Image (cartoon, rainbow, N blue to C red; front, side):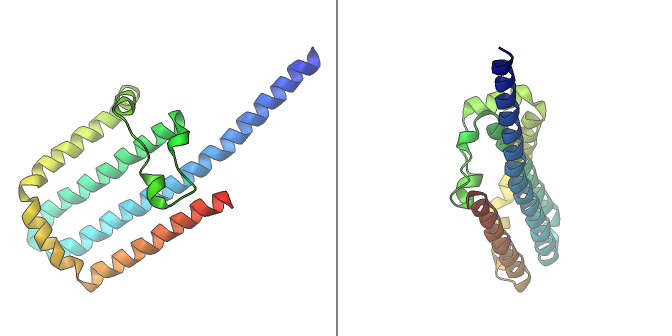
Length: 174
């Protein structure tokens, strides 16, 4: 009887160690990805506001809208990672990793378990309501900046960083 109990304890302990080792690895990639996204938004804002100074207030709202979206996505990812880890696709492209399945039931459960998620969603909607009336014209002006050397530099760095994340995911499966 003692051997059976000891065996069960060893198996459960081993399983908990295995799951503990895997979870931080998943978070590592997502955390790095999130930080890179935030950095990209900040760098984009700097370039855009220097090239379009009359639009700096609206550009700041757009940057904030994007940053809130990144935080929202991070909460969604952590929810899915905890409750439906099978939805996190790690062995394909970065696109598949960051675009996991998300349902209305997930949204409701996340909002119940974490009121901050509902606040972020509300904040993002508020920011979009402020941006939306100006979006078409702002977007047209932003198009001119996309052709600039400064913005091209940021884009290039962002593409390089994205490839690094794909490499991180690949290494997990090698």
